[in-house]
Amino acid sequence: MADARVAALLTEVGATAVVDVAIEGRDPVLASRLPVGEAGAVAIGAGAALAAEIWRNRTGEEQSVRVGVDAAAGSLISLLLHPHWVLPPAPFGTHGAAWSDG
Image (cartoon, rainbow, N blue to C red):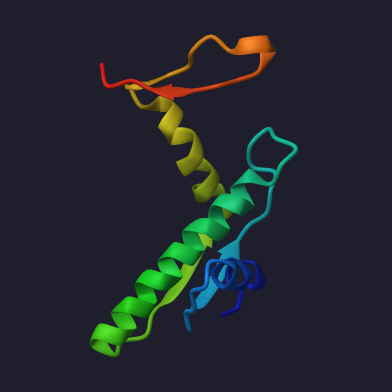
């Protein structure tokens, strides 16, 4: 496991995966003080590492995982472009969002 952040996340949730995971790129990708692109990339990388581990257990074939921070950040904002995603009035000046089935 090449990326320590992915290994730490998997340990936190009680999972293990012996898969090479590379997180490529750095924040800031989006206009945010928080490293949302890197956080998204780590979460995607952990999920992909577990999927690759399942594949290795079933077939014996090794895989590696590469996640781009810019692509991970893009996947986070794409939900806001979905036609059923609406932004309700935010109480007290905060920002909120909700899913609409309509």
